[in-house]
Length: 163
Image 1: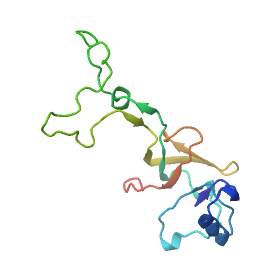
Image 2: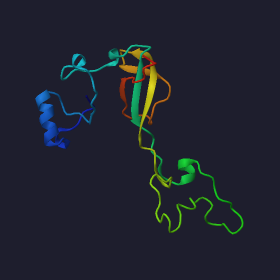
Image 3: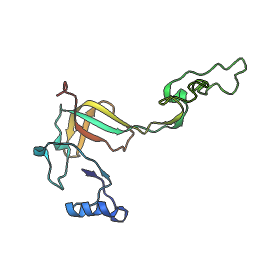
Image 4: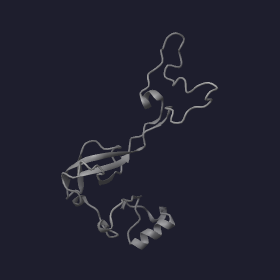
């Protein structure tokens, strides 16, 4: 499936061949959905809000809001070090990262400073409570990943107790 329009000039040749064969204009974002053979849609089919019904459960995937390069206090909620007794410049630093000569390295998955956010988050079992066919809008109950304008991937839920 594809969303948005993309200039032919900015489309790479292998993708352009796929779009020409399918007889559709180049799309900005492409996504794949696993479906059974009887649920396959024809090439060029336009999805709309009519595909969903109020009360059905869906999974929504999207990128979370990015916060840039952050320290361990904001990223993981670590506590500060004391601001007295000679500790003047290192109140917000991580502290010790590992042992001495044994093991002589920092273990993998050590919580350290780095980029925060911009990861794919999946909200499972969200409820579609209303659809607007005229404006082609789907109303979902609950919070969604990302900020305004984020492209979200909506699929049928994988939770068995919600079906």
